[in-house]
Amino acid sequence: MTTMNSGGRTVGRTNIQKATLAVGVVFLLVGILGFIPGITSNYDSLGFAGHGSGALLLGIFQVSILHNIVHLLFGAAGVAMARTAAASKNYLVVGGAIYLVLWLYGLFIGQDSGANFVPVNTADNWLHFVLGVAMIALGLALSRGTAAAGRTTTATR
Image 1 (cartoon, helix red, strand yellow):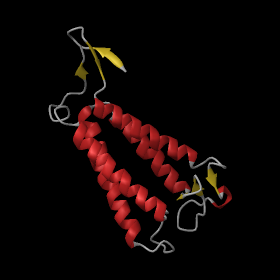
Image 2 (cartoon, helix red, strand yellow; image 1 turned 60 degrees about the vertical axis):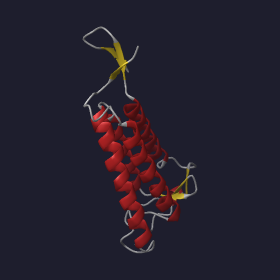
Image 3 (spheres, helix red, strand yellow; image 1 turned 180 degrees about the horizontal axis):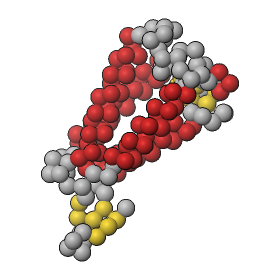
Image 4 (cartoon, rainbow, N blue to C red; image 1 turned 90 degrees about the horizontal axis):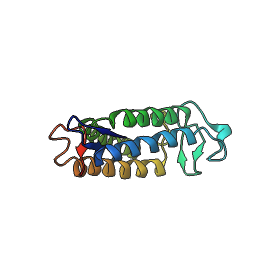
């Protein structure tokens, strides 16, 4: 998205906004793919929630209807929050922290217990760790001089 500012200069999204938009779109895509048989193996065992859902996104990551809905909502939040640099930083840093909490949660619960309501397996747990670290790193690295200044866009010339 490119717009004109009051001085007539062309401005566009900051790098942190672009990153947030990309992360949001990826989460939307993952949420959609979780509902597509073939991309999600064992689709006939896709449950609403709980460790009993045997569906595996890409044959690796355990998913359920609830898990897919969470991805869709998280993706929609990313797309919406990409409108400003400050909201983008919040999405990446807070979202990354949430994924690190999910990683710890997945490590400490029994995968066959009722506490595994999302559900998650070992592959999900380590993906949550990588996502958490990467999102926080993006949020902190790309916000220098942008979100702190409260700018929503940067002028380019």
